[in-house]
Image 1 (tube, chains in turn yellow, brown):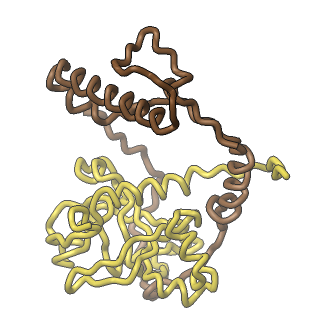
Image 2 (cartoon, each protein chain N blue to C red):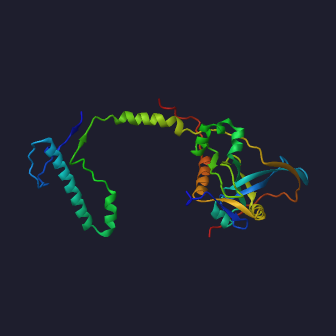
Image 3 (tube, rainbow over the protein chains, first blue to last red):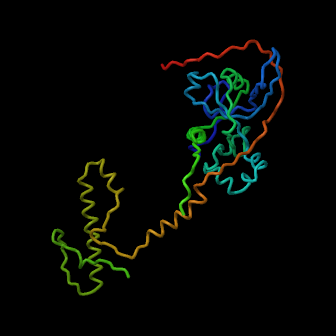
Length: 173
Length: 129
């Protein structure tokens, strides 16, 4: 449906919004203990999607921006037989695999992607000024559009609000 | 066995039909049914014209329920159908899969950090506008 495209490309200087993609975003993992003035820290890089709410980003009501890794579905398939199977992909597309959210392919020239899997199990907070500067340096970036953006946010909320019961009600036979 | 109520079973006390019933043949009975249908459609059209313009657009959206005029009976076994339906969709469509895939970062490296200061954090209050 052309009226409801999934993605658009925006200039790097555009304000950050929920659903913006930042490629190769570094995350500093602090050492277990800080015992001297000089420490070694590990840096890991992910392609990430912004999960913080757009209004908080626009009004700068937050100091840390919530991001989570995004992977091409093919990489998930290589690591998991479940996602390689038709059943697994069907469950993923129907939102029945908590912690993961499937996004459509991007067909925009220069930004073409496979189906994307957003990984809610590894969320990171990145300082606002840091990610803002990083996005400006990247010149152009991919942005997820409504209503798919809100659907992503809802999927994250569903994952986060899960409650595990100590004793489940047995299945009715 | 199906039993269809025919015009013979319809009370016409408050519903005059300008057509003499003869009940002589099955063919005539179906003709009467057709006349009833036609009368209903004419009545609806006239009602439509009497309505304000806004309601005219809404009226065609409603289906005419003829069940009170022409009830239709047949043996039903809906309960078993619903049970079969639920049994069919439950196992595949509604279960969640608790699958975890640990993905390695795109890149991993070590940096040296100089610790400038260590202090207890203070709350950063965002006041509502």
